[in-house]
Length: 259
Image 1 (cartoon, one colour):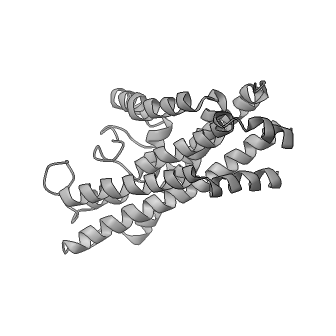
Image 2: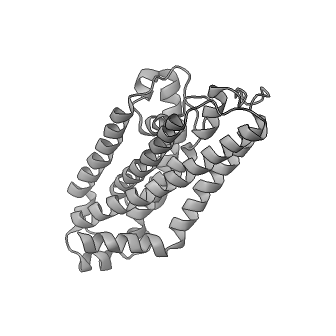
């Protein structure tokens, strides 16, 4: 297992795609929080002023795009072998395909945590700096801010693992990526808006609330009537989903012929 895991981590360290996705997550987070910080309190985006806890929270918890990109990372980790036609060599080198799947899950989770750390640091730094620049006191405690950051880090790592499960089931990279975007940005928004009691169990909405987001101004928006699960329940939900998808893939698509 250690050899397979080191191999997967080496792939992630030495490919431009992983670095590009990290840069994308950082760039989207910076863009969104910078725009929303500038417009907070003006009424344009329905974001309270940064002098309030509600307004500041919107900014420093706006890490949803990084979570989506972390899921994309997981999909590419799982499907890249088939897109670049290197799966045959990988499975010849390590015939135990389940072991390779587990290594991909662990590697993607580890790098996903990094995505969450970068995004949460950016969102928190920009939000606090914007509040300070306007002469406002920081009205959210350090412990609460740290909790939001920890939630975002965990959410990104777990969604990366979910992405590996999705990619392992689909194998086709484009189909898996489309499925992730449609589900996260359309299906969950519709279901969450119509049935908030169901929406809080959906993975991307749950992950976003784990990072502290609670506003329609978040990206992606949180439906106004959605009551989030407890953080521990969200972690169990996302972990269980990643393990379930991985287990199904190990029993089905991972065993199939790759030619």
